[in-house]
Length: 170
Image 1 (spheres, rainbow, N blue to C red):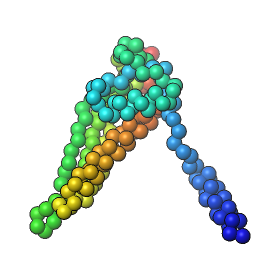
Image 2: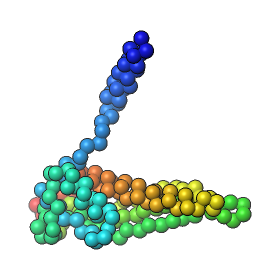
Image 3: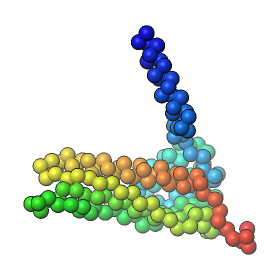
Image 4: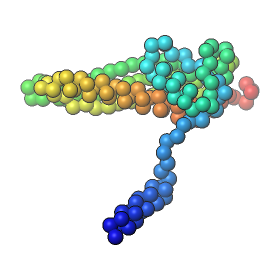
């Protein structure tokens, strides 16, 4: 009887997930045969993005911009820590971490496929002076999570990229 109830409960949960349109996030299909990523060699976001595109298997990472059908050009990357609140004794109690990433997506002729755009990711962090090491580790994990979130957002934007040429340029 107990097994039957569990099975029925599982069936209800699965049917609710299917009914709401839930599906696991799969690999992104990019509309380009080849893509050049203009990132510095030491850039973590660039390395993670290359890894994710290679895992999709449909788009080749070009070594030069002239060899690519499209290029993702990294602009400025800005990381910021802002104090949100202080305690009555003047100690920091909340921080805001902000990651701003500017980029462009161009075709092989240098025309914009996606106009210059930016991604801004914000995370809030409570802070406690009595747990400095733990809070530093939490901040490091939040920055890493923000980098991973940025890669996912860039993949979604690359997958949705379409030319925005005026009629006269085609």
